[in-house]
Length: 245
Image (cartoon, rainbow, N blue to C red; front, side, top):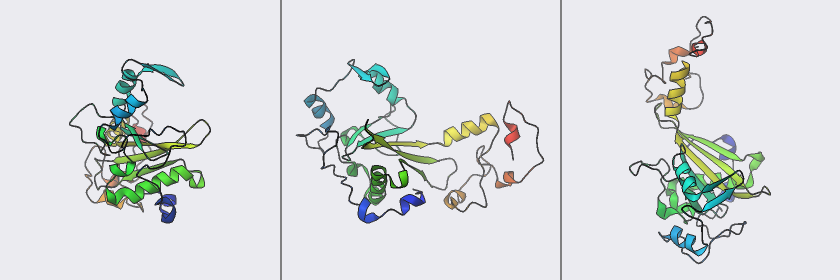
């Protein structure tokens, strides 16, 4: 992943202390005890233990009233892959895809629920993940979110990760909300409907990985020659053509 500089500069002696086995206690007192975190049936057993709402039971939210079914239906259809990890680094939820054949960019499965988040990361990614968690927990220089593109050398696959600090009503760290998406379809549609193009900046000092395998003739990946200045065009508000520069 392409890390922002402030994240790269963090002290590994601090962020590697993050307990990714979730052996601690959530400050909000919401940790469910007495069930093996690695139990593949953790969700059902934990829900039964706390008499969790389900099905057509209503849940009162801060700006709405919905059944559990309605929440599930809505979240399954929300764009992108979403995950919530509490302040104890325990994976509590993700929006399971409707399509069973869909291959998630950040792989999750129902049996992961209840696990320490360390179980959901490949070993080579654990240090970076801990860095993100620790950054959101401690907010160096006031940062409350981390954005990371994933360079892969392909302008038609723009993988984007966004991690957001979640706070309780008193402003204390309550966990991390992660959103992962291939934003290429969004960029492609935006370009096609506004008359703009995604181009390569030959003078850019970063993003070199993207330049090696790019399709320069693609609709959203036109040749870098498009960046050359052209005579000023009259605005065309119906297509956004005035933005072709």
